[in-house]
Amino acid sequence: MYNQRSSYSSPTVLGIDERFERVLCYVLGWITGLIFLIIERRNAAVRRHAYQSVVVFGTLSVIGLILTILGGLAGIPILGFFLGIGLGILGFILGLITLIAWVLFMVLAFMSPETFIGNRRELM
Image 1 (cartoon, rainbow, N blue to C red):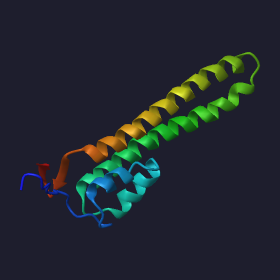
Image 2: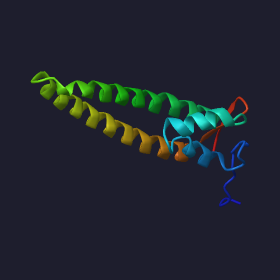
Image 3: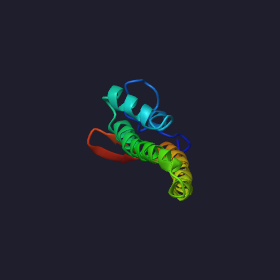
Protein backbone atom coordinates (compact mmCIF):
# COMPACT_ATOMS: atom_id res chain seq x y z
CA MET A 1 0.00 0.00 0.00
CA TYR A 2 2.71 2.49 0.92
CA ASN A 3 5.09 1.39 -1.85
CA GLN A 4 2.59 1.91 -4.62
CA ARG A 5 3.05 5.13 -6.48
CA SER A 6 -0.03 6.60 -8.04
CA SER A 7 0.20 8.50 -11.26
CA TYR A 8 -1.45 11.89 -11.52
CA SER A 9 -0.62 12.10 -15.19
CA SER A 10 -3.42 13.47 -17.26
CA PRO A 11 -4.04 12.03 -20.73
CA THR A 12 -1.94 13.11 -23.68
CA VAL A 13 -2.58 12.94 -27.41
CA LEU A 14 0.27 10.49 -28.06
CA GLY A 15 -0.81 8.22 -25.23
CA ILE A 16 2.61 8.14 -23.54
CA ASP A 17 3.36 9.26 -20.00
CA GLU A 18 3.08 13.02 -19.52
CA ARG A 19 6.50 13.12 -17.88
CA PHE A 20 8.21 11.78 -21.02
CA GLU A 21 6.21 14.05 -23.29
CA ARG A 22 7.34 17.08 -21.27
CA VAL A 23 10.97 16.02 -21.79
CA LEU A 24 10.41 15.43 -25.51
CA CYS A 25 9.36 19.07 -25.85
CA TYR A 26 13.01 20.03 -25.30
CA VAL A 27 14.90 17.29 -27.20
CA LEU A 28 15.45 19.27 -30.42
CA GLY A 29 14.95 22.71 -28.91
CA TRP A 30 12.31 24.93 -30.45
CA ILE A 31 11.57 22.41 -33.23
CA THR A 32 10.11 19.73 -30.96
CA GLY A 33 8.53 22.44 -28.85
CA LEU A 34 6.67 23.68 -31.91
CA ILE A 35 5.65 20.14 -32.88
CA PHE A 36 4.19 19.45 -29.44
CA LEU A 37 2.55 22.87 -29.33
CA ILE A 38 0.72 21.97 -32.54
CA ILE A 39 -0.24 18.36 -31.79
CA GLU A 40 -0.86 18.35 -28.03
CA ARG A 41 -4.39 19.53 -27.26
CA ARG A 42 -5.25 17.62 -24.07
CA ASN A 43 -2.49 18.26 -21.57
CA ALA A 44 -1.87 21.79 -20.32
CA ALA A 45 1.47 20.93 -18.68
CA VAL A 46 2.91 19.53 -21.91
CA ARG A 47 1.66 22.58 -23.83
CA ARG A 48 3.29 24.87 -21.25
CA HIS A 49 6.65 23.10 -21.65
CA ALA A 50 6.29 23.16 -25.44
CA TYR A 51 5.60 26.90 -25.37
CA GLN A 52 8.56 27.46 -23.06
CA SER A 53 10.80 25.48 -25.40
CA VAL A 54 9.72 27.53 -28.41
CA VAL A 55 10.20 30.86 -26.63
CA VAL A 56 13.52 30.12 -24.92
CA PHE A 57 15.30 28.16 -27.64
CA GLY A 58 13.74 30.18 -30.45
CA THR A 59 15.12 33.35 -28.86
CA LEU A 60 18.55 31.78 -28.36
CA SER A 61 18.53 30.63 -32.00
CA VAL A 62 17.68 34.11 -33.27
CA ILE A 63 20.46 35.63 -31.15
CA GLY A 64 22.88 33.02 -32.53
CA LEU A 65 21.78 33.85 -36.08
CA ILE A 66 22.37 37.55 -35.46
CA LEU A 67 25.85 36.81 -34.09
CA THR A 68 26.60 34.71 -37.16
CA ILE A 69 25.48 37.48 -39.51
CA LEU A 70 27.55 40.03 -37.63
CA GLY A 71 30.49 37.63 -37.84
CA GLY A 72 30.49 38.27 -41.57
CA LEU A 73 31.73 41.79 -40.80
CA ALA A 74 34.98 40.30 -39.48
CA GLY A 75 36.51 40.81 -42.92
CA ILE A 76 36.95 44.53 -42.19
CA PRO A 77 40.64 45.29 -41.51
CA ILE A 78 41.61 45.98 -37.86
CA LEU A 79 38.01 46.51 -36.73
CA GLY A 80 37.12 43.03 -37.96
CA PHE A 81 39.84 41.48 -35.80
CA PHE A 82 38.40 42.88 -32.58
CA LEU A 83 34.85 42.29 -33.76
CA GLY A 84 35.72 38.67 -34.51
CA ILE A 85 37.20 38.13 -31.05
CA GLY A 86 34.24 39.74 -29.33
CA LEU A 87 31.68 37.84 -31.37
CA GLY A 88 33.60 34.60 -30.83
CA ILE A 89 33.46 35.07 -27.07
CA LEU A 90 29.76 35.98 -27.22
CA GLY A 91 29.07 32.93 -29.41
CA PHE A 92 30.85 30.67 -26.93
CA ILE A 93 28.88 32.12 -24.01
CA LEU A 94 25.62 31.76 -25.95
CA GLY A 95 26.41 28.14 -26.76
CA LEU A 96 27.21 27.42 -23.13
CA ILE A 97 23.98 29.06 -21.96
CA THR A 98 22.02 27.06 -24.54
CA LEU A 99 23.59 23.76 -23.47
CA ILE A 100 23.01 24.43 -19.77
CA ALA A 101 19.40 25.53 -20.37
CA TRP A 102 18.74 22.48 -22.58
CA VAL A 103 19.96 19.98 -19.98
CA LEU A 104 18.37 21.85 -17.07
CA PHE A 105 14.94 22.12 -18.74
CA MET A 106 14.90 18.42 -19.64
CA VAL A 107 15.87 17.35 -16.11
CA LEU A 108 13.36 19.70 -14.50
CA ALA A 109 10.59 18.64 -16.90
CA PHE A 110 11.18 15.01 -15.98
CA MET A 111 11.53 15.53 -12.23
CA SER A 112 8.75 18.09 -11.85
CA PRO A 113 6.22 16.73 -9.37
CA GLU A 114 3.41 18.97 -10.51
CA THR A 115 0.92 18.13 -13.18
CA PHE A 116 -2.11 20.03 -14.30
CA ILE A 117 -5.39 18.17 -14.41
CA GLY A 118 -8.08 20.43 -15.72
CA ASN A 119 -7.61 23.69 -13.88
CA ARG A 120 -6.46 22.12 -10.59
CA ARG A 121 -2.84 21.77 -9.60
CA GLU A 122 -2.07 18.38 -8.02
CA LEU A 123 1.14 17.22 -6.38
CA MET A 124 2.50 13.70 -6.57
